[in-house]
Length: 279
Image (cartoon, rainbow, N blue to C red; front, side):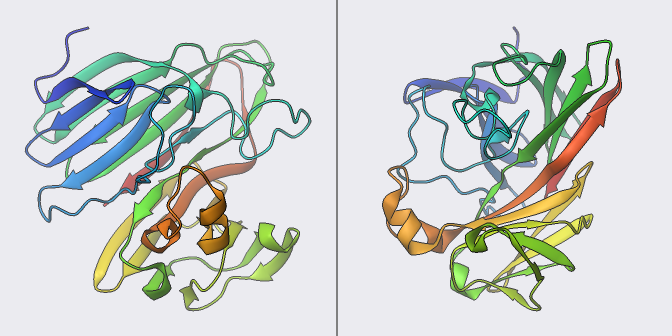
């Protein structure tokens, strides 16, 4: 299809990607996985998203970093351990449905080749709407095309680039979280929220706005349509064990994910939207 003037189709190793360059920002979206790889506002020329230097772009393995699309389940499948973690769409080819340049930025609409796959028996259409302007707006829309309600989980699994996780703070969370590193036991959210070890937490607080404080820099993460926030950093031992991360990768990244972990019901012919805005 004909792309908006701000968009170019490029090759990134073995996959294709959309390169966006408008008055507000530059960005990059891989068509493998509908995966946002970069967002750099021109107002400060600071890259917001982190992609591993060891990430694999072969069109077969999910990309490490950026904003992976986890759908229609998050983490392990609840009943079938043979299917991929985090669903199947992040390892699919996605197609461009529409693009538009406007006075406020560039809008791109994408859909996976198919929204239906092994491990999910509902009939649905997944659509990703990305707007690149002064902020990065990501909308993940799930439309129930069937004749009975469906339930799904998902995540905008965003990796943020930071200078040093050991000097980073996260503002805006409170209440109880489940800690995967401690057998899913529940704990009270620490204040201040800082990082000294492997962190893998599901927070059931669902604030609209969170702020990552990275030394003197601030990144705002604004969510809607979510029921939880996942915070993740693998720390050193796990980084060393992962083939698509450098040994010290954990120092310069933090995942703050807008998620649905408790099951979102969607009535027939209705649409639910999970949104994350990055500023």
